[in-house]
Length: 135
Image 1 (cartoon, rainbow, N blue to C red):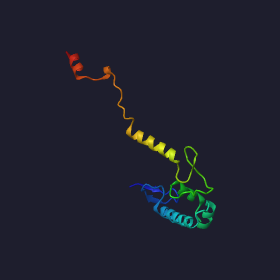
Image 2 (spheres, rainbow, N blue to C red):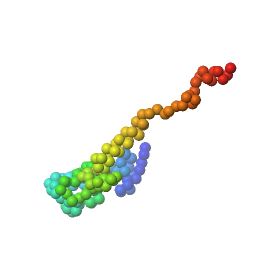
Image 3 (cartoon, one colour):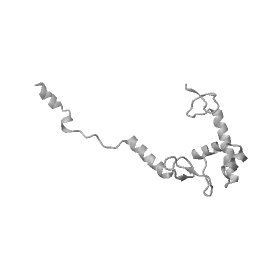
């Protein structure tokens, strides 16, 4: 059993793959629902307006954007940047190009290069050579 402290409130909880306890996750979900509903009714709102009307911290709203749960509107003045190249993005942490590059690198590292190591003739172990040395 893996018991940890919640990184937000400090309470003990049974670790289930999340850094925060179930209570804090429920609070996050309630905040997300408030933000989502407000943005649905007011699509051109900026972060300060959403923060003021929903009483959800701007850092939490940006976290929802980084997680890919919300998306910046086309005409918005809010700019998220790719963590690798700095290109403007609308949601998540990486632009499409960097995400694709990361995917390729990951799949190559999992599969390996596909090439077998080069063996030189003299490095091969031959049973017959070993047998002849015993004579």
